[in-house]
Length: 325
Ligand code: UT7
Image 1 (cartoon, protein in one colour):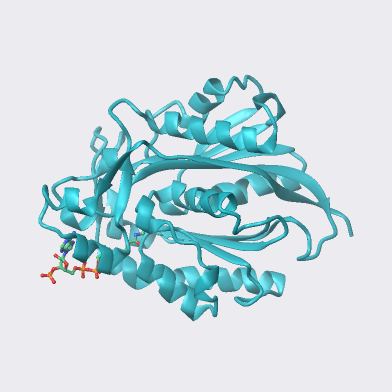
Image 2: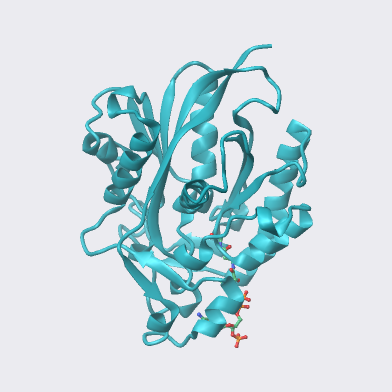
């Protein structure tokens, strides 16, 4: 049976130049390098310069992905951009990127699923491609979380960073088996009952302000491993695969302890786990494409490899996607 698959044609990412170490943070809040590394695995994060917006980071990542794919903006039908830190309340940051890369056709829109945004965006793009509504979709995760942090709250300000990553998904015929290249399965979940555990305390319709990120870290942690492993098991069940069949596990990079516990529970060997949280911190919707790009560029992820991505975040939202690279 021939069917359409969304295959990865190119990938790119961008990180702001400035890095902030744990030691630097310990001069402004009551924390230490030791606490942050032990509890999260984070050693440094990138922070956008004054005036450097989410759309600027996203545009750099998009241009890198286009170059990697050997394509131009004219070849793209649609942009799906996942972010919780848009340049403006509206228009969509995706349209700013569309303009910046010189694309004046097709459609561009933002998608908001906080840290799960990239998985939701991949799943959304995949639906447009497999139904024939789009042939090539630029999928971006981009964030400037530094702008919504309360820099006096040591419980959150040490965790997050800024950055952007992008992939280009392209329609290709597949045989309908797990040997096909492309997105093989995606599984999305949300549950609004958990809103107060991880949220931003502002917004246009409530406070008319941007607000700051608030998190009950321990509560989020408690739910994270169970939720993530559930949606990964859904992907395994839908495709007849398991932890051993994976070549690479590229999880959302929030906390190394969550990543290690999830991999262990799923029978995924630690040398198959891509970790960037040490260098990037938690970049929310950008964390997975940033990690994918690192592992592609350093030669770990190769064409034909079976790659599991997953994330969990505010909402709560959570999801997984199994991709043959
Ligand atoms: O991407 C979206 C999803 N988000 C996440 O996945 C984050 C999930 N949560 C976590 O990663 C962890 O819960 C944290 C890293 C946020 C916190 O680690 P924890 O082991 O759950 O620590 P805790 O919140 O239970 O706090 C332990 C202690 C507390 O002190 P007391 O009450 O025991 O005296 C905190 O006040 O650590 C204290 N603490 C800190 N100490 C030094 C909290 N933040 C810091 C800090 N430096 N930055």
